[in-house]
Amino acid sequence: MKRRSFSTALAAGLVAPALIGLSKSAFAAGGKPTTIRIGFPGAGTGGRPLPSSGFTANSVHRAEIEQEFAADGIKIEWKYFVGAGPALNESFANGLLDFCFGHGDLPLIVGRSTGLKHKVLLSSGRLGDVYFVTPASSPAKSIADLKGKTLSVQKGTAGQLQLYRVLAKYGFNEPEKEFRIISQIRDDRVASLATGAIAGAVETPFGLEARGVAKRIAEIFDDPDISAPGSVWVGEAFEQQYPDIVQRIVTRLVKVAHWSTLEANRETQYQLWTRSGVNAYIDNKQTWSRVKDLRTRINPLLDDYYVAAIKKSIDETKKYRLTRREVSLDGWIERKYLDNALRELKLETYWPTQDATGKFIRT
Image 1 (cartoon, one colour):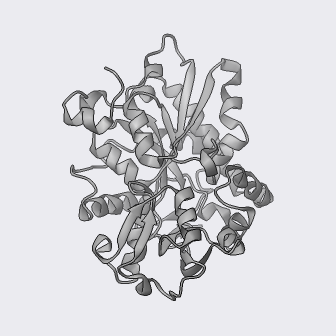
Image 2 (tube, rainbow, N blue to C red):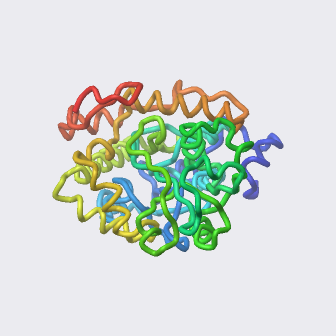
């Protein structure tokens, strides 16, 4: 079958749900693949092929996965999608990906609802500060001042649900009726802020403020109800064919996550994350300097908070009519690889855990 739109093929009955997500490398001969293809739902400024933050980004900047498989002769192929989570779903549906290193909640759920077959292996991070900005010249003092005006977000991404949550926090429960919300990739959104073509957006503000592009009118710090955790997953067929490879990747990622939580490496990460151009150094410094314990954000656990947050996101996708099919967590989360890695590395109690409400129960 020629490559085609995933949604078109599914609607036409040309893609069997049981086969969605089977990748070519999943059927390579022998006991190991020749190539492992790993996707990120985003790209740097101007589409440059680099991730922007978190321990999964560090695995790229420090060439961790390449080092893990160098002796095996396995090639690591990184894929970055300016179209973010929806474009990554499309690529996986067409058999072009084996792993995703950090899918946001909305595209993860939408992909699952349309039949994509993957297994969640660990969380790619959680919490974080959220800022709502307007053009620097805007007279608005609060989000309420923007009612009826144009806001921007890249629709289909985790940012869409996050924007809806922010608006709900300030009393706007029907966002598409109370505002005009358009879809833009980040580069276009920043350009629209600079020209005043949009009234507001959720954006990291510090670099934009320093350049006179934007100003913040609302800020929310580490609210577990606003920011849902990201997810690392593997294609189901790849996982079945190469469980030992999956284990090595998960164990390596947990090692990187541990390295990323060490205070001695904080400043190094701020510098690494600037390479994508998404955030300036000042953005990384300011948004992370309040975090006294890096483990609270850089956290791979699939704890009660992770599960509850994804369930909440599933409910929100139905509420806002962003999915048409039911989505269940049954058989979706595969914990054994993370459990094995934590046990092997003696990190079983290293990370703080959160209960379903986001309250820390072990620090």
